[in-house]
Image (cartoon, rainbow, N blue to C red):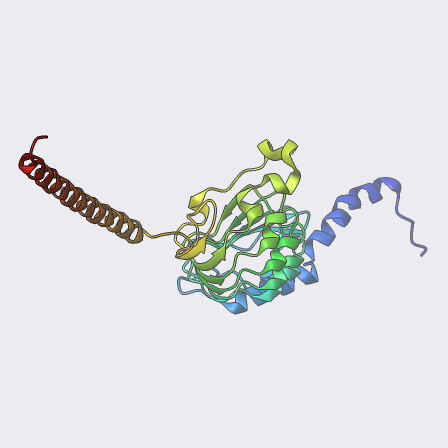
Length: 284
């Protein structure tokens, strides 16, 4: 018996199912990103209990996700937000595999170790919030490759070293916070004075990050923080110079008065002697 070819109306009924089929399959990059991140983190409160191999195989269903803290967009991981879950461990470099990621927020946890430089591969990233963790080591200068970055919040960690000058080239950056770390050295001029990024004409559109963005780093200096310690005179040095100058002026004044009195006394004696001599001289 010959099979009948499908009718056009039947093909139309199958079309929605065909459109949904790709979203049911995990992108291999997203699967590697999520599975490796789960392996690198500790979860003492069980907040990631549904982060299993089965859900990694199909984390997204269109615009929804089966995973805690994951938001999808057209079948790809679009946003990852795992805040305040007491997570420990380290950041996996495999986060770079979530190439469609636009927001990464792992703040208020206990994650330690370095910030992977591989995050620079997230070219669509607009928000990076790793604040209030135990991250250490330098800030990767490669983060400047994330050209769409609007928010970079790294405050309240144990980061060390210099603030990379390259971060000042992020023209879209509207929120920046590296306060309360152990950073040192000068604040990059392009972060303190945003006019150099886009020119004077666009100066009003670019924020100038104030002292609160850099506070709590004892060895960090330069505008908008005070200048480097030792570059100017300390308060004690200024007071010492003032006291020394006052004492020197007092000594000089006292010496001048003594000399004046001595000269005046000698002049008076000489005047008296001349009077005596003229009195003894006979009149002619």
